Amino acid sequence: MGISVLIVGSGAREHALTWKALQSPLTTAVFCAPGNAATAAIAINTGLDATDVDGIARFVAERDIGLTVIGPEAAVAAGLADRLLEARRLVFGPTRAAGRIESSKAFAKSLMERTGVPTPGHRVFDNPAAAKDYVRGEQRAFVVKADGLAKGKGTLVPRDTEETLESIDTLMLQRTVGGAADRIVLEEKIEGREVSLMALVDGEHVLALQPACDYKRALDGDRGPNTGGMGGYSPVAAFDADDVQRAVETVLAPIVGALRDAGTPYRGCLYAGLMIGATSVQVLEFNARFGDPEAQVLLPRLETDLIALLEAAASGNLASASASWTNRASVGVVLASRGYPGTYSTGVAIDGLGTVERDVFVFHAGSAASPSGYVTAGGRVLTVVALADSLADARDRAYRNVNRIRFDGMSFRRDLAQREVETPALR
Ligand SMILES: Nc1ncnc2c1ncn2[C@@H]1O[C@H](COP(=O)(O)OP(=O)(O)O)[C@@H](O)[C@H]1O
Ligand SMILES: [Mg+2]
Image 1 (cartoon, rainbow, N blue to C red):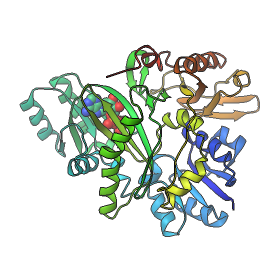
Image 2: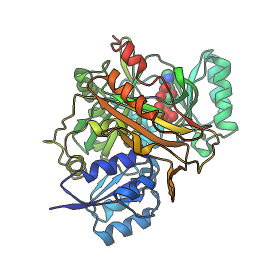
Image 3: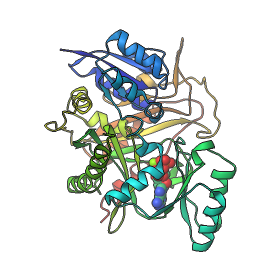
């Protein structure tokens, strides 16, 4: 029996989810809320905004949607899963309460502390003066994090005491992320290499996906401002299957158990942002959704039917599920508009999309269809993903195809996966 699927969101992550959902023999139709110019070409865009809970709930009832897959954190925080569960609809994505693991960093930190999940020490402050007094007393740098959702702009990583004090002012007094920083977390600064570990969760059971790495800074060498993500790769040589298993046992399972025991079971994709240090693995944050660009580099490696897995997670049936992956490596390069994450222009013609090699995936985020072809319509425009037998070859292939695409102001990082190709082992 087939089902129709609704993918919520409009980025390259959702384009990748839509593309993968269409490969499933279980899928009879794929709708997107709202989707983007590229999903319009392969699925059916509804025009419904991702946070339009009423509109989406009505659509799901009218079209008898068998599975709704929530992409962005804003839709989680808007309570979309809660509404669909009330209507007895299958939804992949956590309730608002379970989603607090992402929407409140203070909540996530206290949950980790209670369950003994390794994470840097922290303090929570509602009052900027008290926060600054604390930093002056300690005379060292802290990572300063807005408690609430801030689209990647809520975490500042100052170098010293003085910059830490400025960061508190930036978030709490200049209110650069608004009410998201009415409360902040001051966190111990730690060193290491970051890995994203995502898992499918059905309220009880955890099915880890392959690890991936992403690049948040705009410029080569991890310089420049933080962005939504400039690219990534998978697998991660420095984080092997044993490391994944250990992280499931010490990080993901305890959190899933605690949320279940609290009466707010977690169903959906649980994303742990890990810092791999010389002697320990610690959690920097959780996200309540698939990563972007991690989804774009992982989904092409997944050999198992995505919809079967997401349906199993949504219906509490992950216990007997497993996922198989190609051994091939993938590298994804985000092509952005010049100026991103600041201001940029749009409406610029994108050339060369028809010239990429077969089997290289171009997932759209900020594009629009025009009579003469696709034009830019956002900061992050495309993610170009290539697979190959080695990470080095996947990297070469991704960049070779990036060079076939052109638009005025096209900018991208040239160093993605380079450190991994040069120094794969970490410990
Ligand atoms: N405790 C920490 N020590 C060092 N760097 C950190 C720490 N916490 C966060 N970072 C850096 O800041 C980035 C963003 O932090 P994160 O907690 O993931 O917040 P968000 O993704 O919500 O902006 C991380 O990817 C990491 O590079
Ligand atoms: Mg993060």
